[in-house]
Length: 218
Image (cartoon, rainbow, N blue to C red):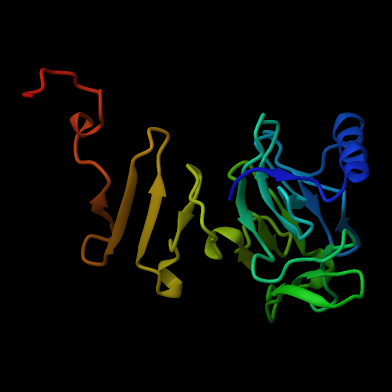
């Protein structure tokens, strides 16, 4: 989505101080919230979740960005259709177990249902793992995710991203991007009980410009 700047110069300075001297968190629970300039940072340091503004704009958003890179790049935005008009945004797990972003007037501008019938809201947690996939879970080991950002993509596709992988939920096709930039779409084959290659952005390494070399006819 392009270059970004913090919601204000003061908040940016506070955020830098926080990143340098505070304990890095990758998870919050219902008892905690993310308030600008707070951030979540994946344990590998590649991704961060926090509030930001686009260059030459006072509108504020919360999303996932690449962390510690010279040019900040946004890879996912929660409130992409409803921007904040101030720097008083809050992201938290609500009392009913949903993921909520609200403004300074306590008006909800983004919400995703995360509560399950058998889930306990008190144990739910929001985590930003190595993959950059923001996950809302019930906090129990081995439990299924209640919601994840990979299932609610915006306009970016990262190497670690996979979408539509849950066969039980009827998602029988998914795509992924490998470290070489090759995009592959996979389809579930019920007869074989496995995923099969449906489409690849290139079929062989020689389809990649400059990989195989050779003489071109001019």
